[in-house]
Image (cartoon, rainbow, N blue to C red; front, side, top):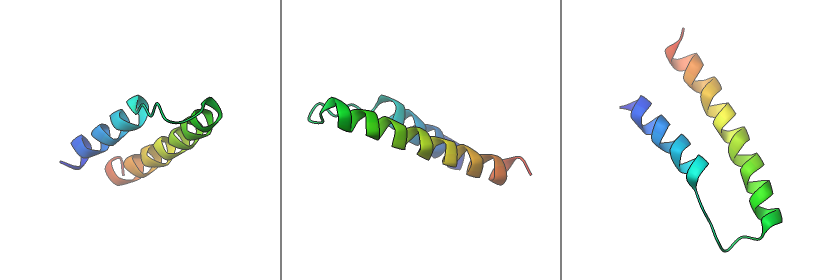
Length: 50
């Protein structure tokens, strides 16, 4: 279940569209999301690959 939830969160992060934000805000948001995804991947590897 945790893997499915994890993949769902990544999918949401990648495909989230917020039309109210300006392009600069979107750029910052994308960088933040990428960082969050990288952090999730590190946690995922730690949890499941050890």
